[in-house]
Length: 537
Image 1 (spheres, one colour):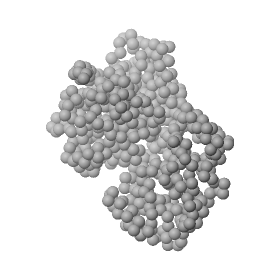
Image 2 (spheres, rainbow, N blue to C red; image 1 turned 45 degrees about the horizontal axis):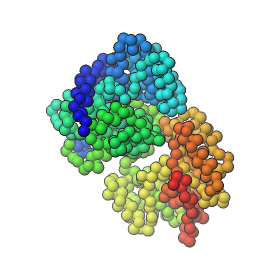
Image 3 (cartoon, rainbow, N blue to C red; image 1 turned 90 degrees about the vertical axis):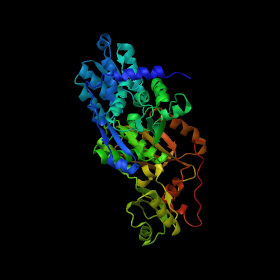
Image 4 (cartoon, rainbow, N blue to C red; image 1 turned 30 degrees about the vertical axis):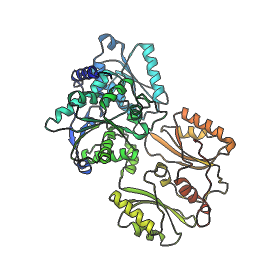
């Protein structure tokens, strides 16, 4: 087994000698009373949103740049980022008077581009290029080869990692009078968890270090489980600040030594963490910035621990205001989404409501469509036990509710659809897909233009959520002989940065979408439509 003592000494020394405080501040370790009450543990929030660029990324970027030699400074620097790292590099380059080229994908929201330019003060040039981070990174590396500039990597660099490690140093300095049990770090490329983890393990190895990733971008989780670096084919874009397909080789190596456990959290759990962070701090964290908070809540619940002291790194607060409506919609942990059938008669809704009262009904979707009526509704329960009690009462009264609280198709699309009679030509050759793509002008048009003319579109739903990602739900009538063409179409969309998931076998599909759209497909004596096998067997 490899002796890790040399690595521990190296990173301890690098962190203790990191030069971050020329531009960074020691951020507050904020007591979170509501989170403490909810989890049964003492919860502290390390407020990296208080940095000049509203994220921890300035620490690592500045520490890397300030250590450049005179010759390297003369050559200038180059970086690639879609957000916080770019702001950190621009701020550091301006402070040190160094020329910087910062490559950003063309899909980067304008608010982030303008933020980088505002910090640049004439020292940094922002280059918008490529439709993805990978394309922008390739352009940055070409710049390194052509101009000789020095690359400032967002995470896979010893000095960057050590700069982030100063957060761990501050946590210990701010908790000298108490024992910290667990420190939670968001994980994208792994620089924060590696830096904080290596410092804590060198100084107080009894402190547990937990990395937190979005469930749809869990590259470190999969890599640590496999014992080797795993590159994800696609990643979810909601927690865009941590949406990394492949972690760094150095950060992976260090996390193998320093991270005790990984936790993955859903989009709903991230949104709930943003809400919890706001309640305790009155600051709106960005999705990636709230990852550690979400992981802390899930860890306490999963491990059933109480009475411990937790620290969550609130890593950033650079959120687009338009995303808040989506966050708010998904943040209510008390809301339960269900589908249920009721008789198509006057008074049926009030009869259903009486089984739920006095809980508040927050959503109710219905359109007259024949017997029985298909209902999509949400109610607020006070606890998991209360929710189970409501569902049991409904079943006892002869209803057959389907709990859709964890069904992404239902929550993202179906809740916004109102039923109506489907055309007679709807057949069993229909397949259903969810698509996600970077939300930018022209994306939806490109998506529509790429649809093959031979596929009949039998359902289409798109709704802008004010987020960085667009979502489309499409049903296509695709005869078996055209399945190869469908595969080609899907591969083409993947190459253009679209991600997709087939939902043909989703339980909510025939129950709600088809039966609600076509009342002749439901009811006594009527069989449900036979669904085709999924394309992605």
